[in-house]
Structure formats: C-alpha cells, structure tokens
Length: 164
Ligand SMILES: [Zn+2]
Image (cartoon, rainbow, N blue to C red; front, side, top):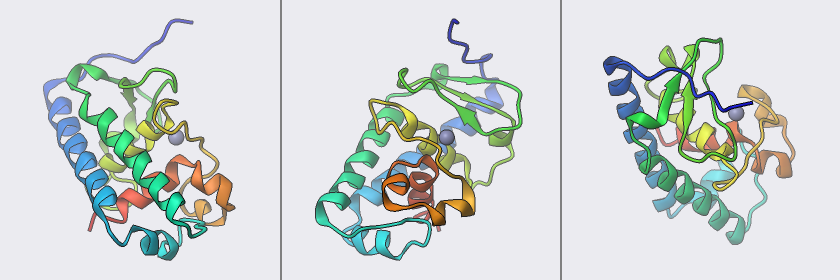
C-alpha cells in the first residue's frame, strides 16, 4: 500500500506545529545538556532505570538523534488525518509525520504535550531509536527495564519532565 501522510496543514496548523517543534528541540537540548541526567533518570517514576554511565550516554544519543530529525523537518513534512489519536509515523520514513485529532487539543506544557508528542513519534523512527509502544501513560511505570528503555512514551516522559 502506498504511504499516506494525510492532507496538508493549513496556516494555523503550520503555526501550532512550528511552535511545538521548536519546543521539542529545546526539550531535547535540555536532556542532552543535563549534567545530572543520570540521577534524574533514576528519580523519575516513569522510568525503570538501571544506573550506568553508558546507559545515560545512550539516552543522550537518542535525544541527539531526535533533535537532529526534528530540526531537519519543515512545514511540508507534516500531514493531517482525522482520528482519535495523537500522531503516527512510518518507522522507516524519517522526517515525515502525520498529526491526528488528539494532537490539536494536547497540552502546551507538561505531560502529553504537543512537543512531547513530536518527540514520542520521532523516537519511533528506526534510524533514530526504533522504539515500540509497550505501554502508555501511567502504565509505563510498570515496565521492566528493557521495555522501558525502548518505549516511546517513556522517551516522551523524560522530555516532558524538563517542561516545567
Ligand atoms: Zn507511539
């Protein structure tokens, strides 16, 4: 089946997405630049963390790749579909993202935000991290380490913890 990214954004949607993308990049920079990232990952109840410097560096690398992927995107890289979900991507097609109904009413800040949604989706790209959706929302607190580490909503929660 041919890829379907939905219809083009209107001007108002372009502005909303531009602001969300700018903020998502800022949140990535906060994660990457946090000298206390390891202790934060240990402290966050959404993250099943096993402390080690190499694992912390791995998270930094993930966010560096997410930042690069989102930075390379422009208005033409997004599409819109109707549906009761936030967004979707094809894992093998970096830099193209479709936004759905829940995105437009998502929070501007904190949990389940628009910026966090972009980070969540970017983490799904195989060339970025290739995360899965093992669990969403509060259920991510119960994931074991391996699944937590490869879960898109966990990546989103790490980023959103910097959005205060
Ligand atoms: Zn997802």
